[in-house]
Amino acid sequence: MKKIIFLILIIFISVVTLKRFFYPDFSKIKTELTSKEYVYKTKENWKITYKTDVEFDKQNKIVFPRTEVAKIKLYTGYFNFSKELNSIDSKEVVKILNDSSSYEWGEIGTFEPNKHLIFYDSNENIIGITEIDWAMRQTYSAPMNRTMKWGFLTYNGRDNFFEILEKY
Image (cartoon, rainbow, N blue to C red; front, side):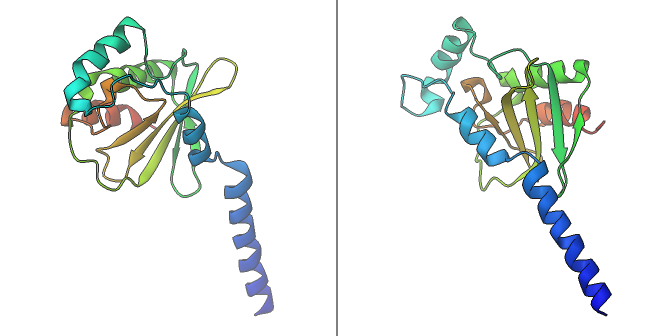
């Protein structure tokens, strides 16, 4: 009996150690990248200023993420094992996330992330994060831009996005 309890304790400690020391701290990444977001002059309701803000983004080449993506890692499940997207899928994911037609205005609700995409540049620096909720309708990206509205995916945007992610 002592051996079984000891074995369970070792497994528990191993799981906690793995999660604590070997996986990205998604909330820390999000906080750091959010601090790099462009601060828009308009503080009004986004729906009112949306068109001018998006035009401003286009003129100033403000996209997500702010620099070119070298690779994207998808983290899923309790242990957050990562899978690297191939370059074609990475480009398509970035295109979908930057396309305003992928999003619609809608209630966000309580956001509970289920999957995480971490974007890296060629120097292995983290340049972006996208969190995906359990219902697979909402995203939260940092640093974000106004084309993302509030991160609520249209049915078409969701279908295109998850068609890629389901490969991994």
